[in-house]
Length: 125
Ligand code: HEM
Image (cartoon, rainbow, N blue to C red; front, side, top):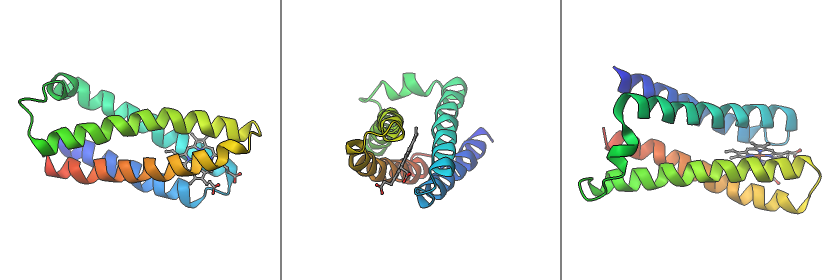
């Protein structure tokens, strides 16, 4: 039951993320949407942790199978990139134009990693 609930949230987050990137030139809409995605995704991780002790499971790479380890690595990288997206996005808002290219490259990487996390989450069910 909780798995379905998590997968539904995850699907909505990924869709919302694509929506936010589609509206990347509408600064107000983009920033609001992306902040919602990031916060919601972090809340989802807390929910998964509270119901399954996911961090304890994830910290045992020897017992985990390859696809689960790949999934964990993708999820962790995505969270790290979220902080970088937040930082570079704030810099762009503050008028530091040189961060725009960085934000774009990191943004496309974040999108790819979040989508890969989503796909691999079905393979570890
Ligand atoms: C996973 C999260 C995010 C992704 C994937 C993402 C992706 C992108 C992309 C691809 C662009 C277009 C860059 C260009 O064409 O030069 C962009 C623009 C921008 N992003 Fe983000 N972004 C994310 C989060 C954020 C956050 C959290 C903020 C603010 C705190 C932010 C602020 C901006 C701003 C200000 C722009 C320029 C918009 C404009 O044209 O006025 N982004 N983002």
